[in-house]
Length: 372
Image (cartoon, rainbow, N blue to C red; front, side):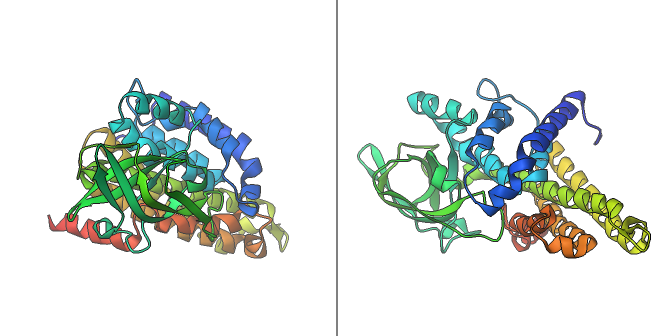
């Protein structure tokens, strides 16, 4: 494939880069020290059209996956937490509504959500069900014309701020279905925020359902896993872009520090030991970018993308750990200080090892692909 960007893609990249530098960078450290849902910036990113990028017209802008990952990287460059919240909204939080909601429900929820006026999230993970979705215990039973949901979910991104929830629940022994539940529904309880190592402004909570009535079912009964599959590859490519963004932030900050910090009469960047760190960082990031854009390109071409998305996410997330560690070493004591962003990047980058599938699960999936 041709890795050169089109004029439109370059313009999108420049637009989000300028926005992130102007609007996200000044508040990123405070969002980490005083964790809260970033309401204002969330809405501003909606005004940029970010939540509409991946959806076809008339709901969305019908843009390609490469454009989307460029925007994700630019947001994550200054705040992985903000990028995680906004990426949830742009893919998992609104996807099932965009594909399956009808009538007044669609009109009332989808448009405002894509403008950033309503917050959505997805509820899959449970205390005893993570990668093994079919082991989930949350159930939905039909009661006349409505569905009632009972169970408990955990690690639900944006739950305290969410206006609506896409909920995966068991509807038979061997199948899952997806449902729309709106804030205020009877029996819906959003629990305490989970105290995390990083991405602290991406507020994450438990959510429980006690005979909670669903607004509607999203898709056919039993189609939950089937509906998730085409989205899963995009989630992994998106997570690779998140990792690329935070890694690039660490590299750029460390490179700037190496130019400015002087020891023994010259900039530390002139010492070979520091140059070796920077060379490894740059190589990791370039390889991660190529893999991520390759997987995005395959998605745009309508090609089977499961293995390539898994490879991109696996490499980019592991590369982000290495890059952030190198950056901390370059900056030495200052890399350990919360006065500099690299300390936050180092904590935040761990998130990318988990979201979209752990490295171990991804390796197993890639190996299964090879076996085919």
